[in-house]
Image 1 (cartoon, rainbow, N blue to C red):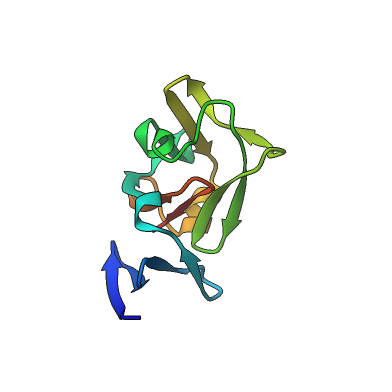
Image 2 (cartoon, one colour; image 1 turned 60 degrees about the horizontal axis):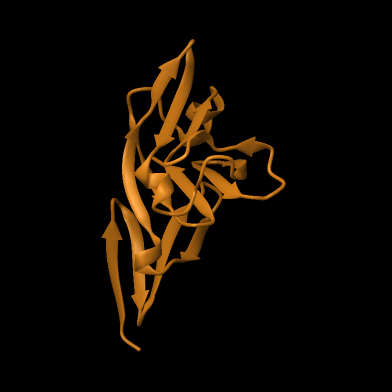
Amino acid sequence: MKKTENTIQGRKVIQQGNRLFIEVNTGRGKALAHIAKEELTQTTRKLGANRGKTRLWLEGNILANQGWHTGDKFDVILIDGVLKYAKNPNGKRKVAGKIGRPIIDTNTDKLSTTLNALPGEVVNVIATREAITVQK
C-alpha cells in the first residue's frame, strides 16, 4: 500500500490506499482520526463576540451536508486546543434552527481559553456525520 503525506489547512493528512487519517494536535499529544474523503466537510469560521463572551456560530450546509439536523442532540467536549461537538442521542445540547437550516451557537469564554484564540481570529472546522472538530 502506498503511503503519502499532505496537509489540509496546516493539519497533517496521511493517505493509505482509500483511507485518510487526519492528525490533530490536542495540546496534550497528537490524535489520529480515520475519515474517508467523501465523509469530510471542511471550512473556516471567524470567532465572534456576544455580550462580552466569545461566540462560534455554525449553520446551514456545513451541518446539513454531514447529516446534522435541527433537534439532534450532542455533547460539547473542550480539550486543550480543540473543541469537539459529538453526536449523542442523550446529549445535553440540541441543534437549533429550522428544518433545512440547522444552527449550533456556542457563546462562552471557554472558547477563547480552549482554542487559544480571541474574537476576530479564524478557526478551522472539520465536520463528519458523528462529530465536528474546531481548532485554531
